[in-house]
Every structure is written in structure tokens, then in C-alpha cells.
Amino acid sequence: MEIVIIGGIAAGMSTAAKAARTNKEATVTVIEKEKYISFGACGLPYYLGNQFEDQNEMFARTPEQMEASGVNLMLEHHVTSIDFKTKTITMTDLKSGEEKTKTYDRLMIATGAQPIVPPLAGMDSDNVYTITKIDQVNKLKANLDKYNKLVVIGGGFIGVEVADQLAIQGKEMRLIEAGSAIMSGPFDPEFSEKLKGAVEEEGVKIHLDELAQELITTDGKVTAVKTHKGDYEADAVIVAIGFRPNTAFVKDQLEMLGNGAIIIDNYGRTSEKDVFAAGDCASVPHRLLGDSYIPLATTANKLGRIVGTNIAVPEDQMEEYVGALGSSAIKAGAYEAASTGLTEKQAKAKGLNYKTTCIETNNHSNYYTVQEKIMIKLVYDAETFVLYGAQLFGKNETVLRATGLTAAIHAGLTTKELGFVDFAYAPPFASTWEAINVAANTAK
Image 1 (tube, rainbow, N blue to C red):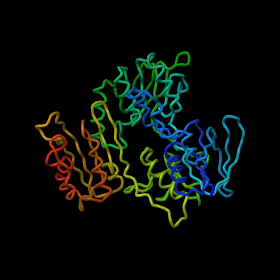
Image 2: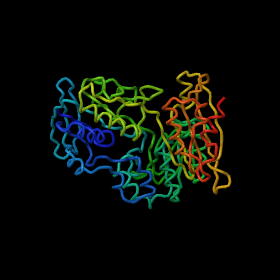
Image 3: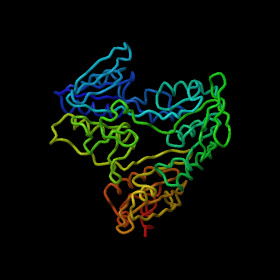
Image 4: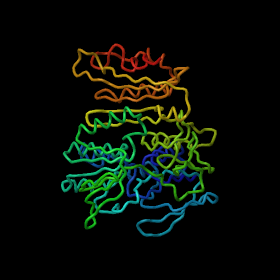
């Protein structure tokens, strides 16, 4: 069996590793546009923030390791088209410029996504950066001593993380968000407001409901960002407004979401026979929402592993993915926050008959040092009390509590059951009534 995987970062390499172990008779080939594989871009804001120094920490596997495991690599090759009828891939060798073709028996598309760059004047300036590739971040890192005033455009995960990390280093940071809140995807307004306050405590100036209109330049470099409300000086600009799936080369050939993400089923299969997909180029089967776009490393790796089995075995031996809950977390200054399952916005949009409860409670016993408040919001069915979603915000010991809430949502527990789940207790870690118990018992 000839198994070909297009893309060698998270989902692609998870698939390759698993497929090579699952079917030792198969030939597994990975085609990757970059010189490297298995790169964890989630670490880039923290590498930029000097939380660690060795960029190799962000590479889970080396090409040599993968080839030693029996996976063939075609690095610096860019796939330009696929003929699904003849099962033929056309690609360009980026080193020689030569056009090549390769056939497959089963194919996996894991081409990821690219940062959305708005068509603004000045966007091609030398001091404008995106935070997705190691070369770009190394360039920014090398020039940081020259930059004092930096503007981040976009208030999602990367924008907030980068602004926070650079503010900690003493840079004058300004974050411009076109919407009415930062982090508005995974969080409801009260949590977005808490996160805004946490980042502002680090000295970041946040501008909401403000749209960047132009990057003002002098001699090919940005000197200011112009919005409909004002001009802001900038020694450098970081663009982090979202991602677009890298699927243009198969447009109109596969079923896709509105943003171009390839729709897959619970087995990772696309609408084309013998073709699978996963990662930031594909949809994710969400347990409560169905086909969703969730460009997170966790789902990419899990679905990559599922596809690694299914692409290498007969159909009757394929494994079904259990479904995601969109669980995510972020560190903002001295605080941390997590979201899992449905937000209130999502429950309302889905037309569910839901209720919410939102409380502040303590992380552990009052007589143990450094007691902190944790804010917890639960979204649950108004009649059955089945838990749909949860959000948390606080300092120490906050995000890891989301693990228990994710498991509860996955299992379909009710708030009534959750209120009496036997969580571990000791004064340094919890109160006799764990914070999750307390929140669940306020659901009426």
C-alpha cells in the first residue's frame, strides 16, 4: 500500500508515525514544503518572550528520526494539485524548480493554515511580522533591541500571548482589536473582560472596536498604525488576526466549510474515497456542535493519530474519533484562563434551552498560604442539568481544573452529579468542597 501524506507538522507527522507502526508492509511518504517537520508553533510567543532559549525544543521529531522509523520524507516540495480520479499528486521541488508527480493508494491532507494578512497599505514592510514560522520569529527576536513601541493587530490567542510576553520584557505594547472584546471566540464577555484587565496589568494598552486601516511607512518601514480612531507610533507591527486553511489547491474538489476547511467525518475521511485530512486545514468533529473549525494542536495531534490507524487498515478495522470539545487555555500576565465545551454564546446560537451559573470561590483552604479566587462559569441544560460548557479564570491552580470539567462534559454528567464528585482534598490544593463542586451546586 502506498500511503502519501501532504504536510509534515502536527497532524501529518502524527499520521505518518502511527501509519508506519500500524502497517509495516505499507510505504509511507510525507511531502512537506518546509525544510523541517514536527514543529510546535504554539511555543513561539514564549520563545519570543525568552521563556526558553533553544528553538529545537519546539521540534518534536527530526527528519532523521522519522526516516529511521521507516517514513520517507520529501522536504521542500510544494504540492500544487491532486487528480483524485487517477490518484496522482503534482508537486514542485522547491530546490530545483522541477515538477514531479507521485501516485498513492491512500492520501492524507495535512497542509495546515496560513495567517490572514489584511490587504492594507504598508503590510509588506520589513518590520511587519506574523508569529507562525520560526524564521519570522527569529528575525523579530534579533531586532527586538531596536524596537521599543510595538503594535499587535488581533486579540486572539497569539496576539494576547505575544503582547503579554513582550510587555513583560519592558516593551511598550499596544493591542488593536476590531471586535468588542479580546479572546471572544472561546470566552464569554465577562471572561474576556477579566483577560483584558490581566493583560492591562502588564502594561499593554488595549483598543477595542478599532479597525486598522493603514500602516504608515517611511523608507519601507512602518512608523505608525492608522485606525479609524487615531494614529499610533510603532517600531514594529505584529499581525495576528486569524488563520485561513491551506486548501486552495483542492478547492471545489472536496466538501469544505465556508472558510475552506476540508470537512471530515469521525474517521478522518473526506468526501473523496481513500482521502483523509486533519489539522488546521480540516474541520473537527465537535461532540456538541458537529463540524467545526478548531485550529488547535491538541485536536491536530489526536485526529492525526486516528487517521494514522485508519489510513493503514481495512475499513472494518478503522477507529472512530471520540469528538472534541474545543478545550483551550491561555496565560495572561499573572492570571490563567480556560474554556471547554460550549460558551453561552454558542449555546444560544444553537438554540439550546440552557442556564448558566457564574461564581467566585477559593482555590484551597483559607489557612494555607496564598489563597486565591477562581471564577467559574457553567453552561448547562435548563431541564436535565446536563453540563454543556465551562470557563475558568484565576491565578494558581485554575487551568488544570478545566481537565475535570472537560471530562464531566465529555461524559454527559449533570451539574447535580458534578456537585458531589469525589475530588481529592488536602489544604494546599483544595477545600473540602472542591471549587468545581461549589460551582456545580449553585446551578439551579
